[in-house]
Length: 207
Image (tube, rainbow, N blue to C red; front, side):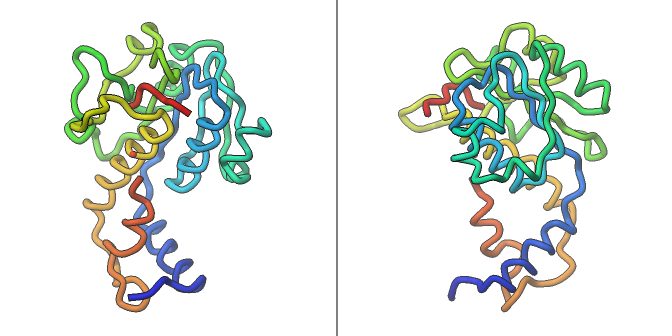
């Protein structure tokens, strides 16, 4: 057991990219803390997110404080601004996305159980650090899901939630797409990439 060298890591990531096709977008509804936005951007770039909708007072990925956390990974993403989360949800739906709100709300289902058609692009909507998704944004979602937290703390940082939700969407796709071969040095598809990618609706996003 050893750490992968740069060449092996590139080969492993390339193998996972070949198994990753479903378009994913994020809708950030009033995520005001730049450090949270930067962390979300970094996770989005890692999980191959196609686009970000920035609604309301969401901090820009180009903000200096956002970039300090994202480490410049915003260059791998595109984003657009929208006045409201509900309006952004309508834009995403018009582009073919199934809009899934990540929120502790009545009627929400556990994220692992939400119905996601395999052939449908998914847009995950995450809300304000304290107040979550706006009521109008919730109503505009096609489905609402939450991340169960069985510990003594009943909520998660919004950026952590974004990471968990992105991983879950990708995990479903990967399970349905068997690997073509083992990874470098005998590392299989459940090797270091799976460990490094594991990461976390968040709802209460303390910075």
